[in-house]
Length: 270
Ligand SMILES: O=P(O)(O)OC[C@H]1O[C@H](O[C@H]2O[C@H](CO)[C@@H](O)[C@H](O)[C@H]2O)[C@H](O)[C@@H](O)[C@@H]1O
Image (spheres, helix red, strand yellow):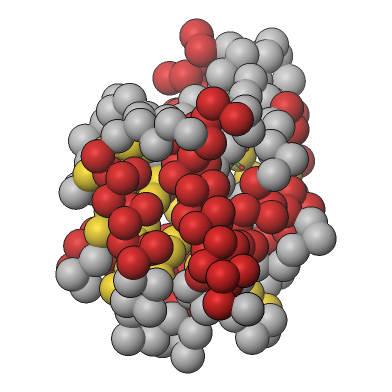
């Protein structure tokens, strides 16, 4: 993140976020989406750039909240961990189906042989669609068309068919230039509800921040619990989020401000 980013909390939602987490750290729990929220979108899933300072910033914000911070993502849990090493945050992966609590206890979905065969069929069936990328996430699979937007309708039809074929344990999850088949057992709202049962999060009001359709379930949960929900970026679809932030850079800027305030207060207290 540039120095300029650090000094420019750009919009009302991020200014409120800073005030809440700096002034009332025991009142709130923070739930952050990754792609398009913490990290700028890129043309392919592996082309994302994690700003060097971001993992440490998240660690300081987590310390400010005494551990009441979790990442809630469509990425697989091991992939998300790799982005923020050496830190290990509570993470819900695969849109809520994979879960690691604040105590480190982890629940992962095992993929069935039938799902493995279905992923192979998807690779074969999309081979002619130049630019379409298949992302194998274990118990979920994503078909990306950011580099081949003309295939969106054909891909949606194909993915809908395959999701039906996969049966009731999987569902179709549309997203930004992507169709995914993910485990049906939990969505991001369910993951946030599970965190709020844990001692590190219990009794706090949730603040959920995301940018895409998959984040709507955690926005709804936060709203229902009297918390706050923030949708990042330009709105291409309807949202139930209560506030809007301009960009991942505005979110990173706000988090950096909170981290700095935390470190200054810790230093002056010691
Ligand atoms: O829940 P998230 O953390 O936001 O993850 C959602 C999906 O993000 C990734 O795809 C998106 O970001 C890519 C990189 O910027 C971009 O190329 C793609 O078009 C976006 O859809 C990721 O690849 C998926 O696995 C996540 O489910």
